[in-house]
Image (cartoon, rainbow, N blue to C red; front, side, top):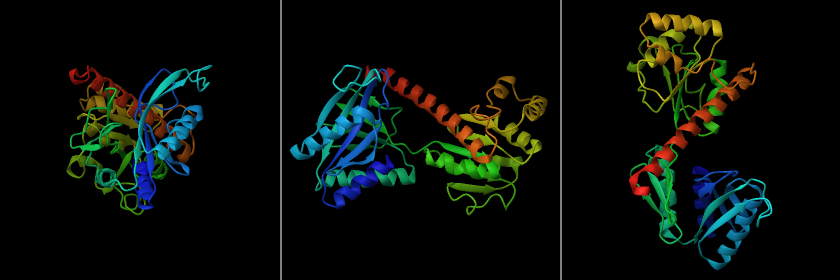
Length: 325
């Protein structure tokens, strides 16, 4: 969303009209789901994607027409073999296409405030409609909602991953996570491994003893924790504290032997078996990763999957709310 609104402001500042395309709903198999966006200008695609292929090509053609006609529209894209678009995906997308005139003070103000909120991680929601002016909501909605007329999107401020350990794998992991929308914090007890210069992608870098994390870093129930310290004793110190509090995800890098040893120490420390079973270890998707860069890809893949599961659950809960029945 950040890229979309940065490019929107650029087009408006250049005196160009634009069309914002947002997938409001999707059924069956589709290349991108609800909430995916693209921005089109007089030169065609300016930023984003709703999945590519014939569906996106059709949307860009329609966007060009809407730019000429200076109007918004709602369009259903049937992505089925033999259908209008002759796509083999097998599903359909409902696309909200909003014409944005270059002299619209409302859209210009909304784009600026949206970027400010994303930068400050204030959160909130974005309400879009083909019939009404866009607006920003102060409260963050539980998930995306669409009633056939009005689309509400939560502003993607990004989930936070706290990496415990600032070694070679963390050095590869931090930029990989940042590129796919996670916020990153790093915690290490060694000054030479815990510096902002070493981790320019991180929003915070903490150098403090592993023995008292809470005194130096506030953790929330929404945080993801990745443990990759310099040894099994530090892993135990960190895990013992993390597993005594609610967190969205805890993953630990290490061999089966180290995991068995640390788990034994955790049991001796009184950590419940249920909490120990929640730990993802060895962390990462099974791609036989060896190098720090490969390990970073493996861990990033697992966290993307965990994030998607959480967002799907939040979206389903939002649609079950009585206000959306």
